[in-house]
Length: 292
Image (cartoon, rainbow, N blue to C red):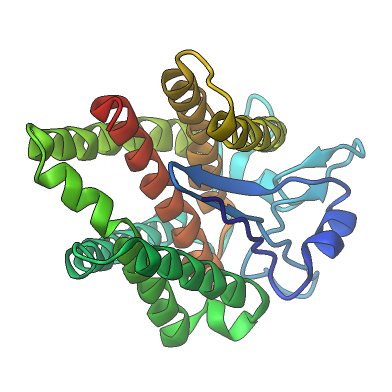
């Protein structure tokens, strides 16, 4: 089953692509669900520091960069120490984002418990509802901030939990199933912590790598679809390893964006990081569970 969507503020994905001069989406994919997000550009003003900085802008050399002009103040010039942008505390943005990610994960766990006995049709409906909720948040700016945005984010996590509830229940009731679940959760935490730390600390622009990872994800989607009808040797192992490589780039990119994000971007940024964690966890289950 495959679901794809775009998160691009109040503009369509095609408009975002033209405005950005490219197709730099931030896709999130996993076993059984594919949800694609796009980082929405933020208009810059000169009279005051904007709440956020566009993740897709043009630098002085005319090339694409994921950092806005003012971001040079945050990262510093080559050979100079990095300086924070006035009015933007990346540590506060990090704390707010990860707090929302943690609460969303709790709602996902609650949804998985509620939907543990759900039928396959109910799980599909939950996936569709989660996809629709994500799209609604993408194109409604009011749904991306404040208490409304947080409520929709938590509802999104709850629906994804219901969708994967039956699968997790099958693992839990199978031999060594609980051990596999805990191992997958632990490996996911280590994976996200490691690559998240690299992305948060690196000064290198990860936008080019993000584009490559996006097209690699499209290839994974095509291969996964063909594998339904064609027997491909070791496809599960290959798909999972390549998927982890792709999502390592997504994880680093989203954590790097924390430095240029503002309070209005926290909810959608939390959604992107949560989707990365969600799909990495599913891939870990594929690897540890084998043919299950």
